[in-house]
Length: 36
Image 1: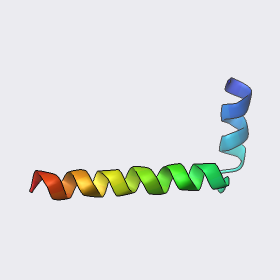
Image 2 (image 1 turned 180 degrees about the vertical axis):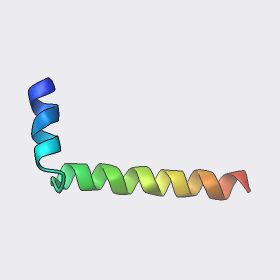
Image 3 (image 1 turned 90 degrees about the vertical axis):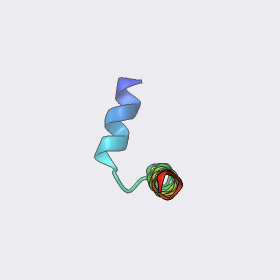
Image 4 (image 1 turned 30 degrees about the vertical axis):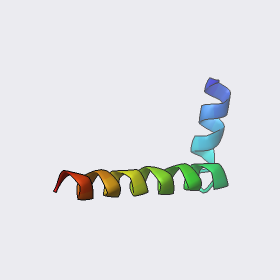
């Protein structure tokens, strides 16, 4: 698990990391719009 985590940190532009980041930001935006 730790080896995989450090591997991702070594490659921050990993496709799965980008997808996760985009989905997270999208959910965050939806939550902000919903709370208004």
